[in-house]
Image (cartoon, rainbow, N blue to C red; front, side):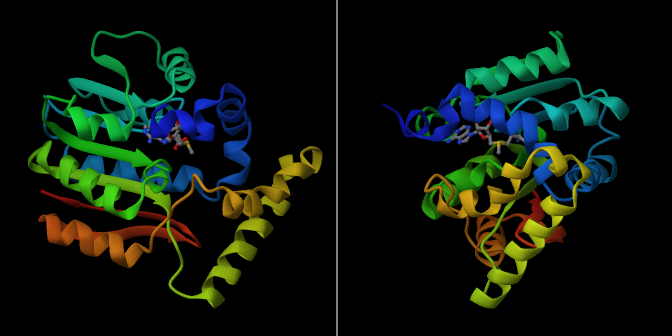
Length: 238
Ligand SMILES: C[S@@+](CC[C@H](N)C(=O)[O-])C[C@H]1O[C@@H](n2cnc3c(N)ncnc32)[C@H](O)[C@@H]1O
């Protein structure tokens, strides 16, 4: 059994629950996605032959948002879960320019199965499932698969730099969920921050350590572009 198959994401029910409730429990999700798209606008949109990769695409929400304004020449969506890829196919439809690829990050690293270069690589809420040494390897792999001028934009959960901030951010997250109108009928969602903490598939690292790793690999313009509590959008350019 691969590392991905051992994780909860390999279970249909877990993936379905995420798809059903993530719009409720992810704070400012729309703003994170819009900000990621602003980086595409600034750095990639003039390239009419742009190739785009989404690592850990889930049900394709990000690509749907990108396609509302842009038409990249080639798109590849990668996820370890076939259920998620099926949901992405349903959302985006079958199009010649879009390829859906089932692969775990560990397999990509082991087999170099991407075999092409990209201008924009995006990932959201997926890479925190890797250990820090694996994250660094994946960041290096991403760098190697970007063309000069291409960029990597990463929206993910990060470990706060102190216990006090950790308590504060978890409380902010709980308040967000409690305050969402849809939580009225879904009281169980209030427990999501505790479930996140207790789930050993989640291996977030500090933002600082990940920004440093990106810089060490050679990325330029490395920064955190948007942040709310434990949720951060960060990345860099080749
Ligand atoms: C929290 S969901 C995020 C999905 C989507 N990016 C979004 O923002 O809604 C995490 C996604 O990462 C995928 N995933 C988790 N671990 C993975 C791994 N090791 N390799 C590839 N995909 C993985 C899961 O199947 C799932 O689709």
